Amino acid sequence: MSDNFPDLAATLASIARGFHARGWLLGTSGNLSAVVQREPLRLAMSPSGVDKGELMPEQMLTIDEHARIVDGNSGKPSDESLLHLRVVKERGAGAVLHTHSVWNTILSDLYASDGGVRIEGFEMLKGLQGVQTHEHSEWLPIVDNSQDMPALAESIAQTLNEHQSAHGFLLRRHGLYAWGETLAQAKRHVEILEFLLETMGRTLHIRNAV
Ligand SMILES: [Zn+2]
Image (cartoon, rainbow, N blue to C red; front, side, top):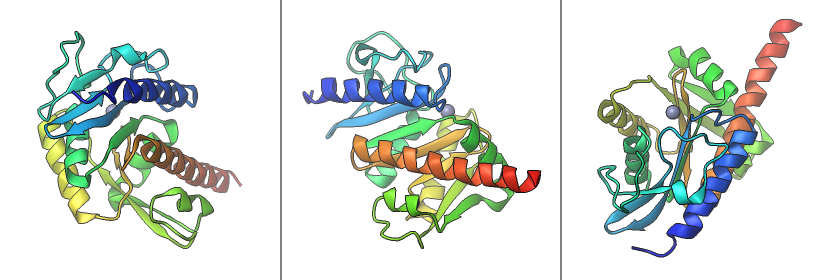
């Protein structure tokens, strides 16, 4: 096993506590992963049913490409592990982070009939990898939610193929997935997308109030 697991586990736990403090991972919601090694594939994965505000590095699990625990730890990997594995496979991501914020939940429902959220003209878009100007137009696809994880993983793979330049996607009335080549980049992408979704949501709210 690669020896970068302890560092990744510590960073993932730290990110979870930080996101919890922002209200993006309340209760046991959301999950986080990072690639430990690619051949064979090993992911550091947050466990199911653990309060993300109290997640500790030693609770992080190592899973294989079938979402089976391989490090002998007790605990159950997140139900959404198959979705993380699919994003890693489709995008070559080094880390995948999934949040359940109020604003991403609201906008994932509000724009569901459009199939996605168009985000354009904001300076903060430049925080997304490869984006050089605020004139960028980002399409954040929305995928219908499901409790059938293999089926949902297929829907996500199809959506990612259709939208090759997307930096994330929303699950309807559920949450945001974002990823990066590294854990630091994935964290940045979540922060940027959460900022942009909250900005759009608050703008709609103010417009409707005046
Ligand atoms: Zn979720």
